Amino acid sequence: MTTLEFKPKLFSTLKNYNRKQFTTDLLAGIIVGIVALPLAIAFGIASGVTPEKGIITAIVAGLMVSVFGGSKVQIGGPTGAFIIIIYGIIQQYGFEGLTIATLMAGVFLILFGILHLGTIIKYIPYPIVVGFTSGIALTIFTTQIKDLFGLTMSQVPSDFIEKWIAYIGSFPTIDWWSAGVGVGSVAVIALWPKISRSSVLGKLPGSLIAIILMTVAALLLKQYAGVTSIETIGDRFSISNQLPGAQVPELTWEVIKGLVSPAITIAILGAIESLLSATVADGVIGDRHHSNTELIAQGFANLASPIFGGIPATGAIARTMTNINNGGRTPVAGIIHAAVLLLIFLFLMPLAQYIPMACLAGVLVIVSYNMSGWRSFTSIMKNPKSDIIVLWVTFLLTVIFDLTIAIEVGLICACLLFMRRMAETTDVKVISDEIDPAEEDSDFQLGNLEHLTIPKGVEVYEINGPYFFGAGNKFEEIMGALRHQRPKVRIIRMRKVPFVDSTGIHNLTNLCLMSQQEGIQVVLSGVNPTVQAVLHKAGFDTMLGEDNICSHINIALDRAKQLV
Image (cartoon, rainbow, N blue to C red; front, side, top):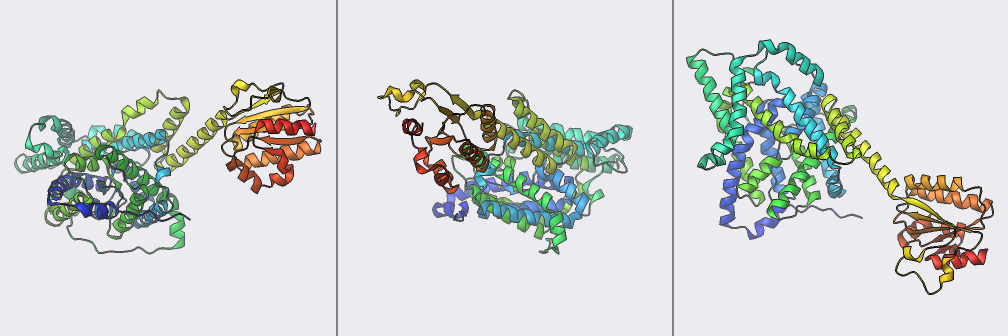
């Protein structure tokens, strides 16, 4: 029985905590809070909810991840990866459906941690991760074109291709003032690190600088130049700085059944992104996170966030790295980041109504570029064809359909290709005359060379590799091709078989039964203890007789001579 692995890093780091570490955590927390502000607003709006819901998510989820998480430096909150999923769920099920799906995802994440799936999830094939990450990045970029250029459109289609057709048709309605704000925001964010490299302002994120500059510019243009065409957050949303009360939606079995698929998608994506972020952070700070504890904490975060009106959350790589780069080394920095966002929400939130929508679109254009991982994408194109197929299938499904389908089909493709590779690593060799001692293990008994000769009436088959369903069928095909031969004894060497599955056992059982009907005795050789235990449970001791399951080829050949 597995034991629960729940060891929050906060409690272990507080044992030797001191004032010096608090000072660095305080500075890091303040900076990360400032960095998270524009992103939380942008992610909230892009996901189809109000800007304050993005900030509430960053506050609640960020606090839960830092208090209960398995990483010292992980920063939790809304991320770009969830934008497309959230938007799609809201369109289909409404905000209440999103709330229920997020709660369900929280439960799934907790179960992942309890069942010790943390280490397994990290091994999801890299081409799948790159494929859907790049696909999400392109989709996010596509959703921002209308606001980036201030296009006049009655409705933006949900389909990727239809969306671009609609954009091209609406491009004559471009608002040049909005386009200037959007392109200017992209330029400021892209150039800010170079401009501020030697300045004390270098600690401030380019996205915040862009928002401040473009908001002031839009206000000045409206006040002194009469430019009123630049749409702001306040034109589209009513801003509130009131903390929402806790509310649990009404749950029915029919609603839960309908939301299982999107909930699992949220849970898997949240698990992948949070564990990837924690792993990257480990490499920088020289620590090792508790993956199952981290999943449980992500589950708590996704249970708490929707109860207070928030959206799905996970570990955010960019904010986690900002935390590390500014000296954060304990979860206290993440707690301070949540407190900073809470203070901003309570006292400065009304000012968000003046932020131009084109500026937020510019922020998300940069987010999508950083998220695209185009260098990783191009490097995988040099890999084997199977990796390229998985990459493109996942990427195209993410862009053209949705992430749920992309993850499901991508995992199926990866599993099928993995099974094919495993089957290719297993080969079946027929030895008819003699066994070459040069190919044997160092413990082969070479003192008696006549043991290398296979007696007349004996056939030797050697299975090299795992004997699972793919290899089992291959072995069955070879046996079928040689069925016209009628030896008295068949020796099956299994010294290089690390494990056997139910299909392998089934094929082996069929072979033994058919051989017995034909008057042929089967002898197993070199069976390791693990495989032997499986065969014992399947009743092979009774079927073949214990004398016919041998630990070494020498013994098997001696047994074959007796039987012949």
